[in-house]
Image (tube, rainbow, N blue to C red; front, side):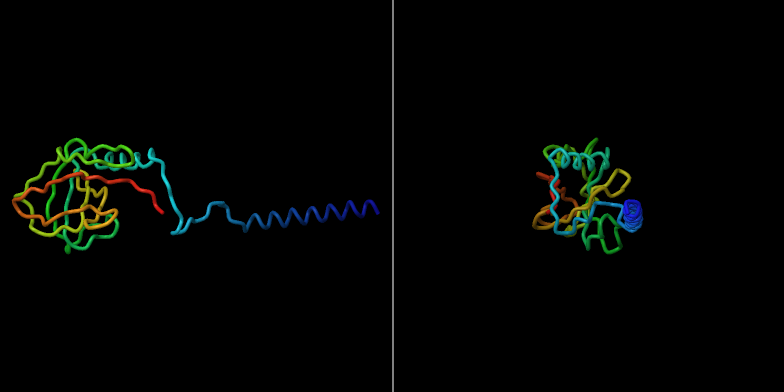
Length: 172
């Protein structure tokens, strides 16, 4: 009887191991799951500041601010024929500084030639490298995440930049 129980235990153990091995083959390999659109993401100030610094670094020396009219292309997609470049200007050696989770632009280091501007009402802004590679695209309008702009772009009239900031946020 003792041999029978030992043999039965061995068979059950083998069956359990086989079942576990079979389950391992079909079980997901990752323990992480999608957080979904309703999940909150909070970043430390250090991380938010690093993200702002990454924009500065990627834009590099001689970065441009390009102001457009028309429907904003998706993400940082190519500008279409339906968009008009209203105005542009160039930053000096850097577009600004990153501190406390925000990018504070160097308005004083911004140069522009208003004689080349096209009169229009702007709808979005691109921050590009000196070689015109889009680093960031920002909507112009009311509300959080938008840059405020008063009036229109006019040929021959400089654009005044005041308190131009990108605050790195937390998603919620």
